[in-house]
Length: 392
Image 1 (spheres, rainbow, N blue to C red):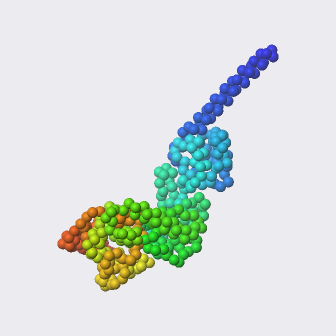
Image 2: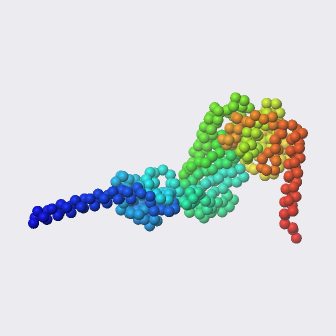
Image 3: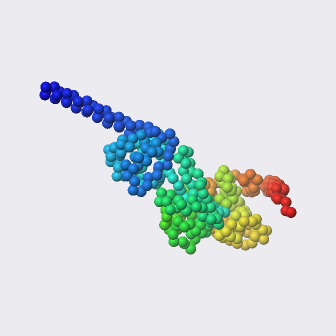
């Protein structure tokens, strides 16, 4: 009898071992298998959360199928203690293994809310953007200028430790405009009075954190512009119309202010290169405007004939060659165009009504282009007058 009992017990033990082994294999397969999420989600991991609470949240959101397997997988991979707080994008079909990796790898949050401080030529704007997990694209949920009331959503998210912040500087903004804007951002500390040299700050996007000093942001911008210039200077054309990096920045800033059409930059640069080579004055309006404003305001009107004749160091209708300094901070593409202009015979250009320009090799051709532009201006003025409301 005892032998029979022992035999049955041994059989039962073997069966249980096989069942346990099968359960482990099944659990491993479930851990790495495609998850139940039909659409991506933005997973918020609050500070102080542990794997037990997170596993429950993931089950509630339909992201995983088993709390126990999720926690055992985290334990087995030694990642239970590596859980990070933040906002994380969990893609559709993510396995439990992939979710564990997402919430433990560290680094910046991969979804959620970001605040962008945009420094433009004509205005400074604060924009709140939130990621739509389904499309993996950001959507604007609030924005305001310095002259407008602060958006309520901005006040809410700026206090959230998971919100990301960055400063986005547009091409063609002056150094004074950048400093003035940075000093106005409540997120930054220690305003500065000294304005960096014109052209020395790279238009780009810069990650910042609450409490960052204005000087630190300016240092990043200056370092990036130096890196860009060193790289592009080394790759410049043998026939580049400038002999120094300083002159390259000056010419690039003029190109930047003259056209907003990317495909035109090298053509515009070629016009100025040809004029410099032929000893002609550059005669470009943006330099005249800089002589009036010194980059500290937007002129907001057309130039007067008296201003075109006025003697300032930047008035290229009066001076020969390049002005003494850049007239704005040029972007990478304009610097590249100044150092590698197209090979053309153009020495004139004028607006063509499409946002671009009509180029010409001769004065007669240029005068025809100017006449056509005047017609377009007159047509637009007449259309605006026709659409204007009638006063009683």
